[in-house]
Length: 62
Image (tube, rainbow, N blue to C red; front, side, top):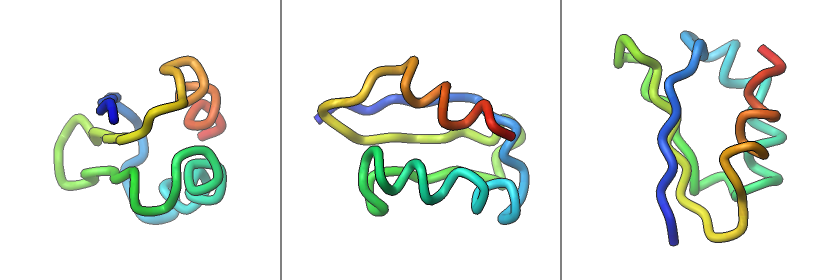
């Protein structure tokens, strides 16, 4: 399993909820987390079969 980390603009629960369904479908609900307390709003993904580009496409909707 690989771990990917991204700086995001997902600053609150409302923002996270906008991408939750797509991330859940792509990597599973227990395989991602956004640290909204971190100033860089780090999204951490643990998955085998997903690329950085696929994740970026999901979170760019915000």
